[in-house]
Image (cartoon, rainbow, N blue to C red; front, side, top):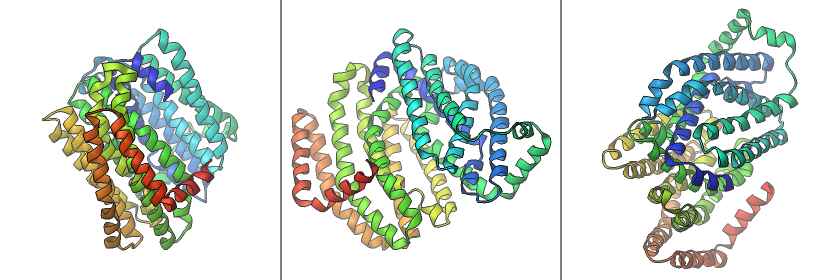
Length: 453
């Protein structure tokens, strides 16, 4: 967060938009360097060595092909996203796909070996190095290309650290990666697992493109500065959501895989209560506070992000219900259900952005967030249906919380036109209500957070 404060002051809206477009294009293309073989390697219990070598060989070959394609298509991508500079960066820095692809391979290998402590250290090294270099160098050279390079320097450091602690590949294994005979084995693995790989790849690609459609799709219709404004707003509002879901998921996710349906339903009910009574109100209070903090910290430079921050409460608030149970279709052996959901969500989000863009960028983002909120709730119901829950009872439970959330929302927005003190008073009263009347909910929250600490 501290780094983000400085970067938002030092870099322009165009810089943020170019960085976000570049990074998301690379992230999207990274899925084509593994095509689901990473998931196959993680879940496979036999022929682990063969599956790993197939994953590594595909990563190297696909990265080389993608790099060459980016060199040739950089100018076209720059024109698509209304930035010649972006096109130049893609042509020159497209080879960074190797870092992303191999980092993914190393992380999957570490997960397979249950090296979770080492993974955490690698991530810490990544963030520390990237942040330290950015704070020092970008102060003197406030260039977006330097920002991009430093970000991937952090990723490279993570890759090298993981490569150092993982069991080394033998020389014979490295030689095989360049052999046609081993490529045939890789293609054989992919052929045998084509159904699984196709499902996983499509789910990942649809989900990634869909959730980042305001940049990847809308970026072809608007100037880069709008993407920078959206990136700024989404980063600010996503920070508390990430902290909330990460802390709770450390306890919640393992239970989904180990418990039976009835236990999972009980856990989801407890988590839903936390989201409705604490998560969403806290997120909305934070979004209101940002309406004052953004002008105070960053001045008038990012004022256009203020309405986007409020709209994104719909997206990230409902994602609190969706994200922690996203593994249920896999647990219930119904990945095709999630694939269908992702495809429908992608179509609806793009339609919302296309329609909204005819009015304004802000309206397009608002429609995107409304559609996303509906689809997050749809996934919530889909998951509960797989667990054979009583959907009527769940609906009544959700509706019972709607009046309080509505009152908080209307009162907060109304008080926003006066002074920061009024929204603070409103949410202070609500917090007092939680302490006095919702002690069980607060105890649930503390019991879930305690193990994560």
